Image 1 (tube, one colour):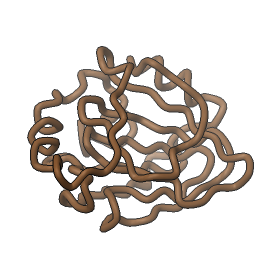
Image 2 (tube, rainbow, N blue to C red):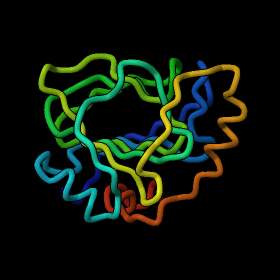
Image 3 (cartoon, rainbow, N blue to C red):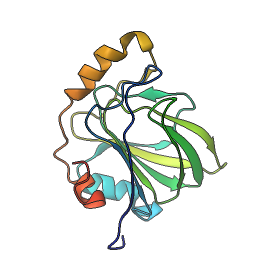
Image 4 (cartoon, one colour):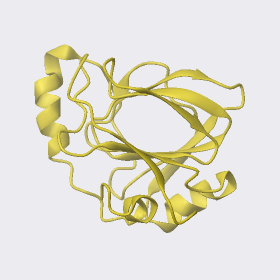
Length: 163
């Protein structure tokens, strides 16, 4: 990674049934890691439960788990933070760090798009929730209780912007 970090911070209030995190932004670090080193980088930093696939094509969030997504191949447009959030273009080598509660959805993707995901220790089996306006107030309180991960990934990729 170069000395200068290309970092986008996305802070969106609860909207459209998505709680988002009340204190921490989602982070997009562009060209953070070589695509063939994503899983190794996540594991070396203590993030576990890795998987390789895509991103769901509907707004969803994880109320009790932080998540990191590394783009292993292709490109996509990811909607972050629910209906009122921005749509971000991502490509191979980009890494997204999503605090608990932050909504995300794949809007479009190249045919070869793939991400590798992972979670901090103890959060490796995340609950997947769809947008629900009726429970958003309770979910905001719930996501605020998820502790900051002890894993150094955020510090290494973002110069302490989040963790």
